Image (cartoon, rainbow, N blue to C red; front, side, top):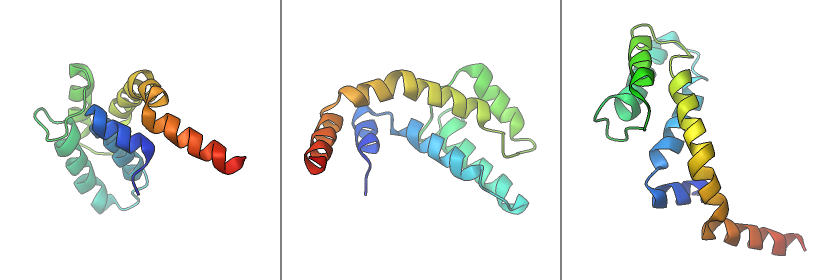
Length: 115
């Protein structure tokens, strides 16, 4: 089932931000050292690398720090990039979500069910 936030993200062309953030949260749960490097590489190639298919909008310094972190991936190697993306979603995508028809419709449905 697609969440309302995911629906809006895809209509705003910013779904890569939410998907990157979720991928990072999943990555932090990795307990196998063998899987850690492979997962980190997949996330980097999908979202961080220049010209990545779902490249997130982060500054050069954050991209380079993340690239350096990839030399010895750890559970925190994406923390700065994830923080930047979270901040972007919080300041941009989330306020738009709260003003969207998707959200107001969901809110109305919920209020009707509760009354």
